[in-house]
Image (cartoon, rainbow, N blue to C red):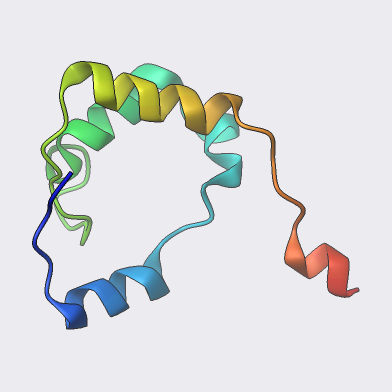
Amino acid sequence: IPVTVDQKTMARAQLLAPDLRYTRDRYPVPRIVEWLKDPKKVKPDTTMPSIPLTPAEAADIATYLVAAELALDRVALSE
């Protein structure tokens, strides 16, 4: 999906991006779909850009977030 974002915005987004591994514990799939379709509608002060997704694409991403195998926590590995 082509989305135009300047380098400064992308760098900031990468620093601010949350750890999505535990999204499944905080939000049901319909809420994640709503967020993906229109982040500013869910949280007006978000820096997440609006990405043009079809309803099916948003549902697929949300399903992945709640069903994918969790990666090991880097902090736990370093202790």
